[in-house]
View 1 (cartoon, rainbow, N blue to C red):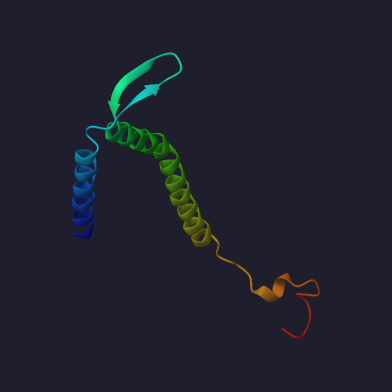
View 2: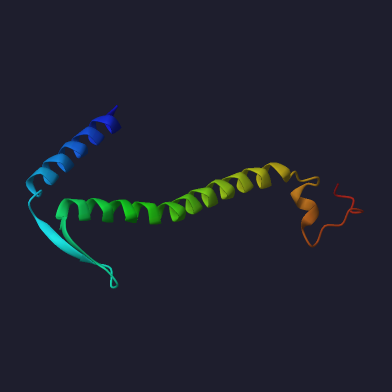
Length: 100
C-alpha cells in the first residue's frame, strides 16, 4: 500500500516539475548530431530511464548470485553428516586402546 502512495506522490512531483519547466529548452549534442530545443524535463526523464535500463542487468546479476549462494549454502550444510565421533579424528586416537 505504501509503495502505491509513494509512487503516486513521486508521479505528482514529476508532473509538477514538468509543468514548471515546459518552457525551459536546451540543445542536446550526441557528438555527431545536435537536437535543438528539447524540453529540460524530457532530457531529465530520458536520462533517468536510460540509467535505470543500463543498471538493471547488474542488479539482476547480483541478486541471482545471492540466490545461488544461499541455495549452495543450504545444500552444502544438509549434505554433511558426520559418520564418526569427533574424538576419532584426533591425532592420538587409538581404536585398540582399553579406554573405550
